[in-house]
Structures are given as C-alpha cells and as structure tokens.
Length: 612
Image (cartoon, rainbow, N blue to C red; front, side, top):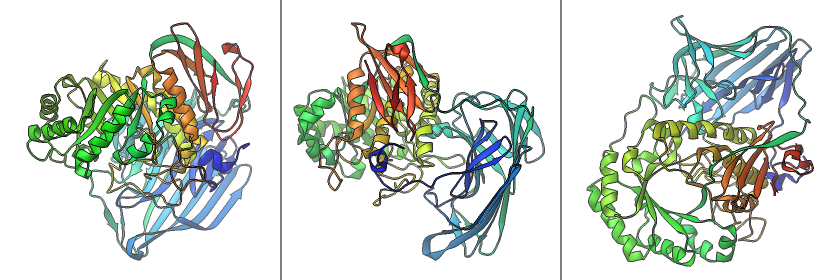
C-alpha cells in the first residue's frame, strides 16, 4: 500500500489481515474466524463460509475469538477457536469451531454453539456464498433434506424469492472436469439470491425465513452445524494468472447516452449547500433530488428550504415524496401539492412511494396494509398534473423485485442500492459492484424500456428496510447497516463511485444519484472532520467527472480484470472520447492504456484517473 490509510479509508483502523490457509491446490483466507475466497487451483469455488450470529434488527455480532490455533502443513491445515457474542441484558452465546482442509480437495467447517443464557437472535448459523461471475445461469445439482436430487440452474435474472429451499447439498462446476459439492448438516438450509441487495453472491443460509424471527436459543442446549466442501475431478491444475500482469483497457461500440448525475438534498443540508453555491456549480450536476418525508416531520418549512436552493441553482428538480397512505390519498397528496405551491418550489418531476414500502417484506411475512399502487399513482397524477411522475422504491432493488409496481402509470422507475446490508469489509463493498449489471438487466426484463433512475445509492445506509433503524457509527468503523461510513470521506468512495457508474452505464439510465452535496452522504466535508468544513472530499472529483460525462454517448469500455480496474467512457458529438478508470484494490495496479493511445500507467490504491 503506497498511500496513507486515512486518505484511503477515512480511518486508520486496519481490517484484520487475512491468514492464507493452503493444502495442495486448495486455499482459503481466514478472517475473524471465517473463511473467505476459497479457491482451487486459483479458481474461486466459494466466496465465503461464515458462521453468523444476527441480532433482532439483522445486525451482525462481532464475536471475540479466543484459544485460536492454526496448524499449517503441505497437505492439510487445521484451525480451532472459541468465540462468544454478548447480547442484550447480559445474554451470552458461546461457540467452538474447527476447520480442516486437505490436499485432496476436502474442507470441513464444524461449529457447536452453547447459549450460556436464553439468547435472542434472527439467525445463528452458517452462511455459504457462491460467487456470481461465471456461475449465474449455470447448471447445479441440488439435494434436498428428504434425499431427493434435482438437476437445475442458478438464476440468471435475479430471483425475488428463494430459488432453492430445504437444502442439504449443492454441487456446481468449478471448471471443465472439476466439480464442488457443498454439504450442510445440522439444520435446514435455503438459498437466497443476494444480488437483490447488490451482494455479489448467492447465499445459502440456515433456518428458513418462513419460520418466526427473532427466536430464542434456550440456555444450555448445544446447537451443532457442519459444512463440508468436496472438490473432485481432474487433478491437473492450470496455473493462475499473475496478479502483477498489467490490466488492459479496450474500447468497443458506442451505445446510449450516459445519464444525468443527480445530487440528493435533504432539508437539513440545504443551508450548508446554499453557503457554497460556487462549489455546487463547479460540481456540475444537472439534477437536484429533493427528499421530502412528512412521516418524519417534513412540512412547509422543508419545502421552502428546497425552494430557496432551486431558485439559487436553477437545474432540473425532482421531489422524492414519501406518502403516508393512511387516509384519503387525494387529500394527502393535494396537501403536499398545496405546500409545494405555497413554498414556491419549482419542480420538473415527482417520485412517490408509500412509507410502508420502505420496509422489506421477507418471505413468509405478511404484507403490510397499503393502498393499491394504482390508486396512489392516480392520486399523485391528480395532485401534480403536468409533472413527470416516478415510482418504484426509495429502498432497494429487493423491494422493487418483490413488489413490482404498475409501470404503465409512471413516467420513470426508480430504486436505490446499498453495499453494506450484509457485510461492510472493504472487499465485500467493492465486490458489490459485480452485482449491479444483474440488477439493471433484471429491471429491464421487468419494466422494459421505461425510463429508469437509480439512487441515491451510497456506501452508508440512509434507511434500514430490514430492522428498526440504521446503526449509529460514532467511532467511524466498518459496520453493516451504518448511517455513516468513514470510507465515504476517503479515496475508497471515489473509486467505488466511478466503478458503480461503469457497471450501470450499459443500462441506459435516465439519472444516477450517488451522493448528496453536504452531510454524511455529501461531496464536501462536514463539521468535526480533520479538514476544513466545505473542503471537497475525494468523491467530489468522481461526481464532477461523471457530471461532465452526462449526455455523452456511452462507449463500451472493458478491462482484462474487472476485479481490479473498471473503466467508463463517453464520446462527445465532436468525437472526443473521455475515459475514467478506477482501481478497486488496495494495491498499486499497472494499467495498459495503449489502446487509448496513451502510455502505460500505474494506479495507486483506490485511485481514479481520467484519460482524454
């Protein structure tokens, strides 16, 4: 790593360094007691095997590991440890784990948990992650708990519900002549398509979601689970490509226009935004997305604040309006329209979504009371005649995939994504970019050519559809479902932002929103940060670059290793081509840009670079 950790991550707290475990062609990384990046001959077989304990809001416990032992030999490895989770009111869950790997391709992860007192949890047990690159749509063999075996396929388009239930084992092809069987003992497992949440994996997890949660683990009753991986087939292992090889960038055919870049504005951030209008103008956004939520106290004053900014920075505007939907829809939305007029807020569009749709409805749960969306949209049309009307979800693609809105009544579809729903480590956040093309392709399969917007999508989570609230993060840690994330203020976010835009560009979006201007999701520093308030964060340059590309013709830009470097290209009417590159890794990466008529470059960790 060639840069200061704080500049890269917004924190000097380092992630735990993975411990490489190896037995012949089998390898895995041990991180905080779990296995990640399980490979055979350099090919990723599983993305992770992890023993996970979640609280009643689906937050993940970070257990304390003790008695860790590691025995590493040429033909096998063995790991053992104890761990415990401290729950509310002093409740505690202890568990003991053993991991064994062998050169013949076997891997066994065994855990016995013992609640010291009654312990409440939403999930306690193994999660197994299959990668998506190269596996989506591919054949698999599924064995169910009753012993029946089915030849089927992993979903290509994102499955809104669980593609496989009552699982005992699943077998897939690793490469020609090599298969991997993952067997799960100790409970009933099922698989969900984690691409719904922009996770780059299919997740097989313990305890069916149709069962009640949270649930209680009784004191003194042990719970044992075992995961066994067996890789079989051709013993000849091809050498993996060297990571130091330069990443090649190439340009292909031209496509649709690149989207406008929106900036979301929350009422509490209007004053800070007005105080720095020259910097907002320099950013160059052509779209302001005004958030308005009467269920959380927003009223006429919030709309007046938005109106002041709309007058001072005259670009296209959209009101993101949360609708309570608890009474007469015409009366509710007409009241909002009256406030908009009294505030003097100029709007070009409005997006409306019921408040209850911010919360997810998991499989097996009852859908909350909500008027038909047809009625909600019809009332919005009557209240805001002449404005473009959008709908969808102000939460994530998961909810849009499960509750598919009547698009015929809408002028555009919208949803967000968030990369820290399930995990917040650096690798998982960057890997979430792999899922975005599947999300946009699945959206297009549902809604066709309907104009399509995404965002606001940021590393930090603005709302938690899966629990009572987002997690406060006063110490600036890497934690899932946090309402603030230190990496947003660092170089990491700039690379993630360019990478995000590159992954969704082929979808032909109308608008993409990846930040606010001020506040925890903003492009400028806030009070209490090490730099002066209002100082541009690294993400500012990324958003500024995307704003400059808006409206240009998208040119397909590919790289030889999209796990390390992503590319986004746009071409002007004069024929000038601009290419943005993002290094998605914590390492220096050599990049071959000779196809762009440039000399080779070396990109520092999480760097972004403009070519042209």
